[in-house]
Structures are given as structure tokens and as C-alpha cells.
Amino acid sequence: MKLHIQNGRLIDAANNLDGIGDIYIEDEKIVGIHHAPAGFHAEHVIDATRQIVCAGFVDLSVRLRDVSKETYVAASSGVTTFCVQPDISPIIDAPEVVKHLQELAELANYSACHFIGALTQKLEGNELSSMLSLKQAGCIAMSNGNFPVKNLLILRRAMEYAASHDLLFIYRPNEFSLSNGGCAHEGAMATRYGLPSIPEAAETIALEQCLELAELTGCRVHFGQLSSRRAVIKLQQAKKYGLTVSADVAMHQLHLTENDVTPFDSNYHVLPPFRGTEDCEYLRAGLLNGTLDAICSDHQPHRLDAKLAAFPETKAGISTLETFLPLLLKLVNQELIDLSAGLAALSVKPAQILGLNTGSLTIGLPADICIFNPNLEWQVNSKTWHSEGINTPFWGQTLKGRVTHTIQAGKVIFNLSESIV
Image (cartoon, rainbow, N blue to C red; front, side, top):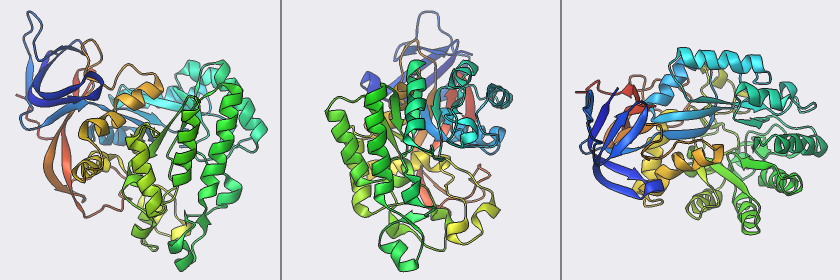
């Protein structure tokens, strides 16, 4: 398909783009920006007047319940590439599982669904998985998800194995002996309502241990879903002294704190937990100064029954893909981040972490593109929500900003209005 996107505001920090212009697409790639290549005749035209055209989003942390359903949710949210965490069912700890999931993604016509292999067998934290086999099967990185590695020697061996095969290790730092099955931040709210709590130290101690092992083993480490002030400080110090590591933050952690949590509403039950106001401020500052490299959705859709018990007994996690863009725009409207920098944290920066040749509006690269209306208001309700997981604290709220078109490898995989001319 030869596709022409016209009159949109093109924004791409990777190429210093910010202005009204056109994009020309052919053979799955961008072949022209502002000017059509010689002999180009569009088969379809998308009028992006008063809309923003940017690179498709690259999401570092997604969990799927139904591949066909959630790939559509990703497309409707402007996400053209995402990584599936290993702690889903079935656990991604064998090449056969990877192949099965790849087939499901192909059936859903979503070509850029990447899988993170399990660091240990069955994620039990005792024996290393066959990481090389998982890499050969197509896994883009290794992780133990939200499950613990039993001791530091096993973690060291896993990181040495990953380093020897040039595998990215994705680690959510959490010292399980300290978190001890908690469900809320160790602060005023947990104390007031008697909720099992998770101290900030559970994150920072695990982070510091992994930083030491990263220096020892030479393993490429990406820290996922940081949540605390001291974690940002420790990571900033490590980067200052030359350690090559990266990190992301979940979008909802940039908006909500323990003060927003309603203790009887399990939609606020998330791991890591929503922490204090100062933690949230440090996460925002860390994003601005480059300590935190990217923003992920940490999408975890749950069925209704998973959230019906008492707060500590419910499953942790929020369905977040569909609020991904509106929450970024909220930060922009609050003048907490520049739009170009915010979009880069959703696209080119996570792509660079994964070593993918996408995430920017560059001639010759795959045409992975998101077009959105930044002023379109919509209410989060059953008529506008696509995910089977309605576990979101933003239910019923009116948000601003909505994706109108998502293009993946030159193919329109989502069209809000079905108005391609």
C-alpha cells in the first residue's frame, strides 16, 4: 500500500521534527517526509489536519490474557510494538511456548509482539532457564517478571549467562523478604487502614544488589517500573559513575500516590505500590533529567473476579494501555514534560533499549506511526473501553487525547473513525 499522511503536526525528537508536514509510505517503510519521492502516487490518503503524527509507541511491559483481544487494545492505543512479560499463562520458559504465542500474534495480525523469556525455569527462581534456546526462538530479553530469584548466587549466574549471549536482562527490583506479601506502600495510608505494607527499601536494596552484579558480570540490565525516590537517586549515581544501565517507570506511577488510594477499591492495588508524593516528584524529575529512560504502560488486564476480594487478597495490576496516551498528555498540559520529550519516552527511547530499528519518523525505517487528536475528550466507560480488563482507577473519568489511526509496517491496524479517504 502507498499511503500519504497529510497536514499533520509531525513530532519526532530523534529527527528534531516539530511542524506541519506530510509523510509518504510505501513497501512498509517511510519513503518521504514533507516531500513525495519521484513517481509516488498514493493509494490512500489520511488527512491529519489538527492532529499529531508521531512514531508508534514501544511498550516495554505488557501482560496478556487474550492475545487477539489485547493486540487490538494495543493498536487502539497507538502501540505498534510491545514486550510481553514472562509471568503470564503459560509461562514463557520454553521455545514451544514462544512459538505458540508468536502464532497467536500472527493470527491477530499484530506483527511486532515481542516476548521476554523466563530467567529461571517456571519462574521458580531455582534453576536457570535455557536462555540461549529462548533467544533463538525469538525472545528479545530475559526476566523473572514479578517473581523472586531465590538468592544472589543464582542471580549472578543468570546475569553471567545473559551477558555471555548478549541478552538484555529486565529486572523489577523487589527484595521479597522485605516486601513480605504486602499490597501498599509503607506509609500513612497503610498504617491508617492496617494494610500489609511494602517499604521503599524492598526496591532500593534489590536495585543496589543488581547494580553491583551488573558491574561484576557486564550484563546489560534494564530496571523496570521503578517507584521510589531513593531508587532514582541510586540509579542516577550509578549512571554518573559510568555504569551502562537503563530504567523505566509505569505511566500511572507518574500520576497517583498513596494519597489517591481508596483502601477498599482494589483497582488501586498495584505492584510496586503507589508511594508518597515525594517519590512521585522524584520519578517525574528522573524522567526529565534522563535518569529514567522510558515510560511503560505495565498493562495488566484482570477479569472482574480477580478484583472482588478484600484489597490485600486481590490480584495486583491495572489495565493501562488505553490511558497511556491521555495520561502523557496530562503531564504535558501540566507543563511537567515537553510533548516531544514525552513522546520520545514512549517510542524511540524504549526502542533503543531493546535494540529495535523503530520508534522514529525516519526515511527508510518501518512505517510504525501513531496519529492522535490531542484535544478529543472521551469518558472511560464500557462504550469506549476495548480491553477485557476494566481494572482501572480512571473508570468514569473524562480524559483528553485519543488515537485516531495506528499504522504498523505501513498497514493501518486501527482507524477510530474509518475515514481513510
